[in-house]
Length: 322
Length: 176
Image (cartoon, rainbow over all chains, first blue to last red; front, side):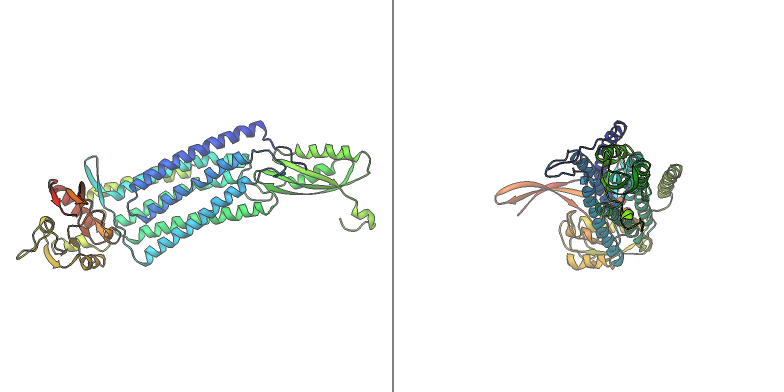
């Protein structure tokens, strides 16, 4: 039984990853504070309750990331010979499913409030010796609490690309979109203030649609990764050019007549197989070993590419298809 | 980034503008216009007997809450149309907005809180409750019910109650 060699991030990416982990801890702390403050001032606004649920839910991806970043660092062993790289995808699948189902639940709640024409009642409160409508306070809380996640999201977003970490990227994307939630919630409350009872539930519906959309998008992305999709760019989701780069590099070797390659993503790393047709069998073992380290040096994300020599199909049938 | 900052700036302006409106105009407004209708008109008040909060009397009802409602109507220049009944049908009528307020010695933890609007507690009463031979002191927070979602009317009533806030009532012995 053999196991994979352990994957090590290059030192500068290692630093980035430590930064990402620190940012995720900060995100958790900030979101906890935000959720508590929002819960305390929530009142009976459905939009604010939905925004609160979203903030509470945004805790799941950072936690998943932190847990998975521990698990995936574990070296491969006879029981898990390919290592633990997929931990992050599995953690993210759970987070995305939670997002999707809660989004649908909140959407149903908002629609039912619209259908039953429920008029939200928001009372007044006394603060610092002044008597005012609680709706104003709720708007203030939404505006203030909406800012911190946006800043954190913007800090995390470039790290997601540089570490080729789709989980981190999606998490940052969600934080970044938090201002939408805050504005929707505030507009809902403004609506109540001018006497539109439906504005609050409508805003809640909009926010829950956003949550649902986020969930669906992430489920689809992470399921494709788990289906061994060919590598894609984190930011654009376009196919990565690395497989063709590997083919070019291999075919540039004088002893290689033809090469083909297939790659997949395992969390934040790539692995796969390359098949080469050699000009001759001379010194083949040594040449393949050298080619293997050449391929690994092409990109830091390559964890393992197994190179296999194959017979020349064209030579057998006298030059047919490739 | 600039776009986001601009939007955030806009948001702050919006908040300031809306908060400014609060001082000048009368936000929040009622979706069904209760406050405007009652002012100088008729206040439809449900009352359920619950001394000392509400008591039957010749003419208009007596009791702490009944008198508060009377004074509130006076301030709005409104005449009170009293509707006697038991708590449940009155609160159901309130939920349908067939009434504007209900006084029945209601407390903050009322199960009706989800279906009608309740004021913030306007008075607390310490009571000694005797249960299983043991006495315990409980704080009861009393509220008045209003039609759901009529936030302007609710705020006006709460403002009134705050000015009129009766002193904390003395502790009183009661059965289990």
